[in-house]
Image (tube, rainbow, N blue to C red; front, top):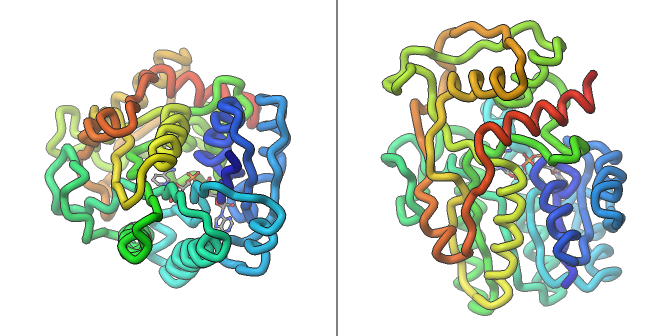
Length: 334
Ligand SMILES: NC(=O)c1ccc[n+]([C@@H]2O[C@H](COP(=O)([O-])OP(=O)(O)OC[C@H]3O[C@@H](n4cnc5c(N)ncnc54)[C@H](O)[C@@H]3O)[C@@H](O)[C@H]2O)c1
């Protein structure tokens, strides 16, 4: 089975490509490298012994995508490509709507042209918005969001739902990720954003490596056990495996299905910092600062549907996540 992985050079995409190759799928990557490095392809080869086919293209470019589909008989698409920084999306909404929506719609048009009917989409817990109580369940209304980034996920879920209604032989799996962290055990792949990291773990890793002076924890007065925000952190390799399970599911199903990928547990920012310090034997320089706009106090997944439908559940611990994240950061930055 040949799988097109858009955004396959990125953080979650590259880990998924490794798992796909290990499971003997044939992989084609389409990535414009707007937030990734070409070196990732070499690293995937170093880990798996197989070099995935790589096209440096923008997925909103129809001609380029048609070329990929003409040269390769694509059976399924896993669509990671997109911009993902919540804060940036507030300041650059048009770029986010243009990139995330155009790439998805172009992809669907080209898939239709070539008769490709299996689609796995990177959605997010952000679609549950600020109103739903946690743990979040898939049947809750996903019609609200707090950022343009979040709205692109809500809108793309809508597009895929309407598309599937119009094409009943199509299968779209909407994977709603919670907070992926950690890295590949080889230390060769991980979260390595350009510039100052937006997400907690790469920020922690850069403070640990001495590249950033200190970590500011946003808010210590939330109504949570230790006052810091609680999130559902899951290991990126568990998340990658979730995509393989979703692909298996899509092979024998049609219709649209939203599925949470999370552990089902809330861990506070403070607990994560402490776990990082303990497992890696490092003292982190941190302070508690004011709350950050738009952050919710706490949320985590109800992860029962993923287990029931896909036979998937997270297996890695918070300690595994902290150890592997540091293993990768040491490899790349020291
Ligand atoms: N990391 C998270 O915490 C998280 C949580 C929920 C959902 N997601 C979603 O998962 C997906 C992957 O996230 P990630 O953390 O791996 O991000 P990432 O930025 O590392 O990966 C995205 C990749 O897509 C590429 N890309 C962007 N726009 C493109 C386009 N138009 N054409 C071709 N390539 C393009 C980038 O170069 C990058 O390699 C994104 O859609 C993101 O919104 C991520």
